Image 1 (cartoon, rainbow over the protein chains, first blue to last red):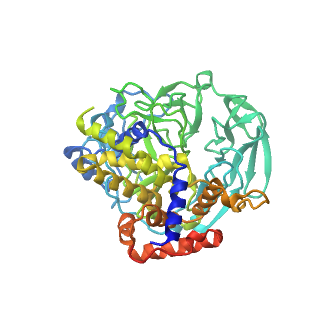
Image 2 (spheres, one colour):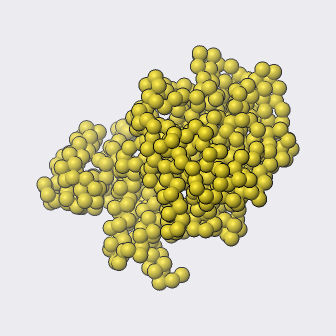
Image 3 (cartoon, chains in turn blue, orange):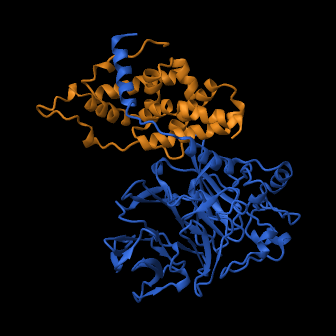
Amino acid sequence: MTAEHDRLRDSLRDLADVAEPTDMYDRAMHRSRRIARKETAIGTGAAVLVLVALGSGLWQIPNSKQQNIPVAGAPQPSWSSSPSAAATAESPGAEPTETTEQSSGSAGRPSRHHGGPAQAPPTVKPKSRTLADLPGHVFYTGRGSNPDVVRMSPGRGRSQVVLSNAPSSVGISPDGLRIAYVTDGKLMVNSSDGEVKQVASDVQASSQAPVWSPEGGRLLVAAASSPGVLDLESGAITALPEPLASGQHFRWSGDGSTLVYATSYCGLKVAGSEDGTSASVPVLGDRQLQDNPDELAACKPTSVDATGRRVTVPLQSTGESTTGTDTADAVVDTATGDLAVLPVAGTVVGAVFDPEGNLLVRTENDGKTMLSLFDSGNALKVQAEEPSSVRGLDLLAYTR
Amino acid sequence: MDAREADYAQFVRTRTHALLRSAYLLTGDQHLAEDLVQEALARTHRAWQRLERVENAEAYARKVMYHAQVSFWRRPKVAEVLPADFEPDRSPGADDHADAAVERLVLRRALLTLSPKQRAVIVLRFFEDHTEAESAQLLGVSVSTVKTQTARALDRLRALLPDLSVLTEVPEAGR
């Protein structure tokens, strides 16, 4: 051992002294409970059911609980009164090799109330493993303040920065060609042809990112601190119905009929976009342990499927007041509050619906980052490794 | 609290600071270090029943911590350092080379320019005094990878810190 080695060791120890002693017990236990929620193995019987459903595309199929839970304004799925018919009703476009009928009304995943979320089942076989077969555009954002927004177009094999130093949270239009953001209270829209246009003023984006309506003609924004809908053609802003005024982080369903939003206590609500009547998504944010034993919460929905039936969220715990990330890592059934068990390997680090109800899932596994695209019938269409050009960025949106 | 939980609580309260010290070198930031240690302690808690001795628990926690930082940490993070921040203060009268605080700052910034794996091998080899073989086992890589990463890390540090003479030699092979 040389004197130089001792000096280096001393220097590192001196630097390590900067670390302040902290009692980490409560934090460690809190995190451990969260891990347990994600990893809790289901019982043997339920596991068998999950295995039966593998490859069937039924990993999000609900059980009969949803029949008694009102979802105001949301169109009731066709299976709601006929659970056994769910498979065929939910998977019209499924690949025969990937989607099979469920033979009974048993849930393809267990209820959280009876043992926690299921382990992720083994993956199913994708129709394609070529990234170029992933249609549309995938949007990413950098981390930290004023991040760049990047559009990756797999079919064209390229990525490009579409907004540098974003001054606020942003909204990507359904066609992927426009991006809305707020700077100094001004709501701006950048188009892919280079046009930059101010479309409103007195807008703030902290509790509500600009959210595009499915047809792309309106923007839901927080104007004068209250959520409202801006008609881009007329410039008029119509406030949301009064019952929704206290909501935040609104997201539209793909068919425009439903809004999903977060409450101040990190629960979720589902509302009709026209009448404003709303119903709570069960479990999430509920502080009663008997109703929410895993202490789950969702402070920010990030995308909604075509009908308002499923929503992506960064999963959190009750008591957390803000989101640690804007990137969703869970898919929640708005009728039951159940978490979908995604049939992908590795850790889910991003999940987002497009307006048609296609679900793009980003995972990390063994040092690789993969993108998996499930269609609205839950069939796995494409699964391919993500290009290195977007490494280190967070998944933001997926558009046609 | 049952005996098993009490043992875990005792482990956390007695070993957290040691873990935080290593985590600080890996991340360069108190809060990020706490995040890293939180993850390591939480996963150790999940495995607590399988760990018969506290020594095993600490080894497990450290292994989780290093793996988390270099391979599967969901959001690998280190404190931000900008190129312009890197240059140490050389103004006359600053007497920075004699100032331990400045030395710490400069070393911290230099470490943050390394890749997570390079930083890990530096901490393992020079701070925790592990052998190459032990470092390789902890990181789940080959010994040759540890050697390569150590050499590259030291090259990088030498380039950034030409005045830091402590980095002029690599530890003996096999140590």
